Length: 297
Image (cartoon, rainbow, N blue to C red; front, top):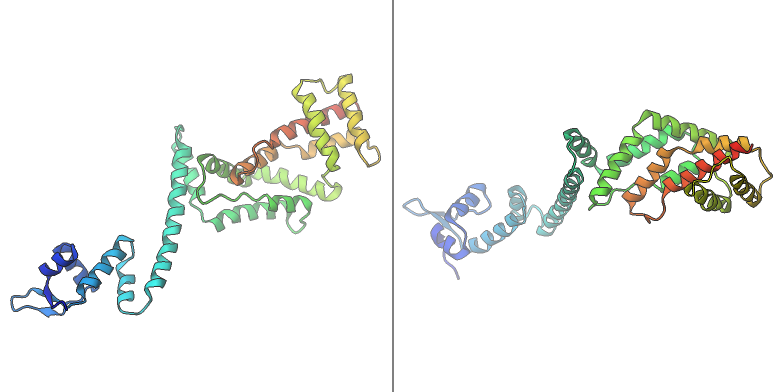
C-alpha cells in the first residue's frame, strides 16, 4: 500500500510537474491530507489515481468545476463525459462552419463579404430555419398551397461539415429571402398560383423542357415557323382544352423569374442534390416557350 507522500514524490509517481500538482491542489481537485512540519504538502495514497483522472479529464477539456462535481460524487463521470461530448460536437460543428467560411472567402477582396458570410453562417440551425420560415410566412401567409408545400419540402439545410460552395450558396439564399423585391415577386406568384394553379401537366412540363429547351439552346427565333411547330406539338400534348396563347404566355411570364431558378439552383447546392438538374435551363425553356406563344397568339 502506498504511504502518504510529499508533492515531489507524487510528481515522480504521476509524471506531472510540481507546479501542476500545486494548481490542482489549490483548485480543490487534489485535496491534501496534511502538511509536514516544514510546511510541505502531503497527499494520501489515493492521490496518484486521483491526479491521473484529473489529468485525463483536463486533457479532454473538462472544466475544473465539472471535475470537482465528479470527485465529490455530485454527478457521475458518465454524465460529465456525455455533456462534454455534446459540447465538443457543437464546437466541432462551429469550427467546420468557420473553416468553410474562410475557404469560401478565399479569392475575394471585400472585407464586408466575409463579415456578411460570418454573420449568417454563425447562426444556429434554428435561427437559419427561422429565416426560411419568415420568408414562407411573408409569401404565403395563411393561404398555403402546393407551391408552399414544395418550398417547405425543398428547405435548404446546411450540413454539419459544409463545403465552401455550400456556404456561399446558403449566404446567397438567405440574402434572397431577405430581399423585399424577391419576397414581393414570390408573393405575387403565390397569389396567382392560388387563383389559377401554376403547374402544367407533368408530361407537358417535361416536353417544354425538352422541346422548347432544345429550340432555345439552338437559337430558334420564337417568331419563326419552326417555333410555331414546337408550340403546336406542345399544345397537342395537353389533356386540357386549348387555351388562348396570349393568356398562357402571360401566365408563364408571371411564374418565370430567374431569381426563382437561381434559388432552386442554390438549394440544390446546399442540399447536395443531383447537379444535372439545372433550374436555370428549365426557366430558359419556359421563357422561350412564352415568347413563342406570344409571337403566334
